[in-house]
Image 1: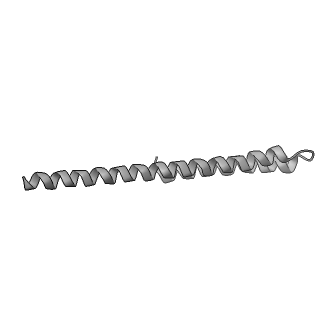
Image 2: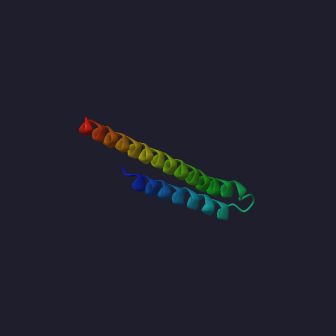
Image 3: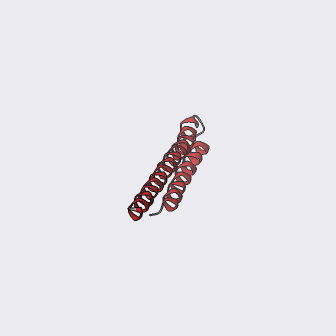
Length: 81
């Protein structure tokens, strides 16, 4: 599964869980705050994990670029010798 597909799947699950929690908050007349906490907490977790996945992908891309530069440097050195 590609990174964008994984983010989309996580987004759909977040929509689903938060929608159920907001409906629960509407149905609960006495104390809706736990349902609101769940709904907003799910969004906070989604955003936190999205940021971590993006940072990890950027680090991976940066490392691969570094490896390519080192390979090209080694190849140029080998051709000069």
